[in-house]
Length: 165
Image 1 (cartoon, helix red, strand yellow):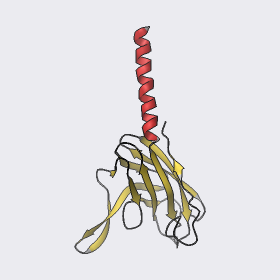
Image 2: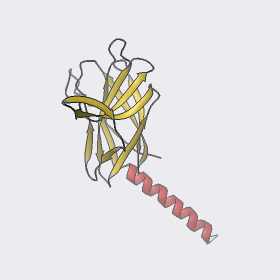
Image 3: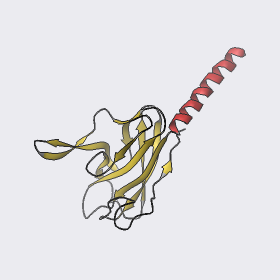
Image 4: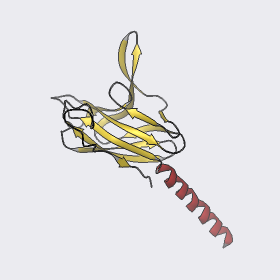
């Protein structure tokens, strides 16, 4: 009986530690631009704030498109090109990383339907240590530059504290 109790206590403590760590990850100001015309691709942007130990975003999932990938921009032969991120995106201990136009972003390739202004879309970020973190994203108008900086959008929707179970 003592052995069973010790095993259950150990497993329970691991669950508590995992939840405490996931609570250290905050995704805020998540947004995407509405689709224009027949465009079949889209992108999402947000800030990841980490108040705990270093972690890494290793992948992203959604049902919005044929493929959903972590992307960045690189300069190659004096031409800016978009590329899929290999190996994940590091989120430093007690630091943050911005997913923004011209930098890291989530790319939706082969959208199942256009992104409509005013709708909310869902993705899941997979962290190396924190595990799956669901994120709800506000779709802004096609001229938006972000939830706090463009086209009259100063309301900060998309800010949410993430907990993983």
